[in-house]
Image (cartoon, rainbow, N blue to C red; front, side, top):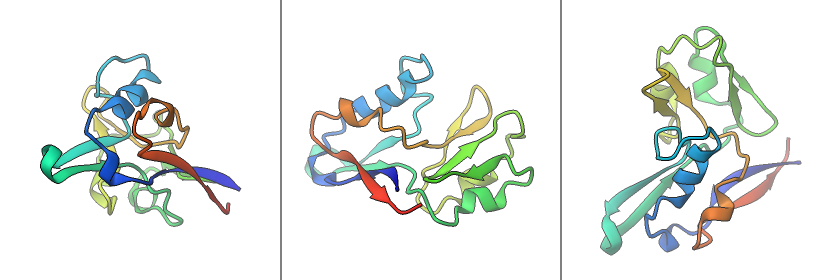
Length: 134
């Protein structure tokens, strides 16, 4: 069994961005630029927020469209081999949920690796791990 990151309570998200900051921090970056998770407003506090993160597809479209096979399947989710990636961006367009983020500086995709680092920083319990069969 593996664990994947899931959003369990969209309604509790206040859009603080702490999950995004935590994710970028894995790379030693302060800010949102390297985050694999995105919090998007659908109307602010009145209408709420959407948390976009890799859903760990069983047959990932991002992996299928990569022309150089830089994205490989893991037990849960995918892994990008950045030395193979040519920065074509096909993976971004292929993701059905918009969960492949783009690193403008490196010209490479950023995809959640389901490490769960962000979970501990969400003060409202929006994120958790879910057991999945591998």
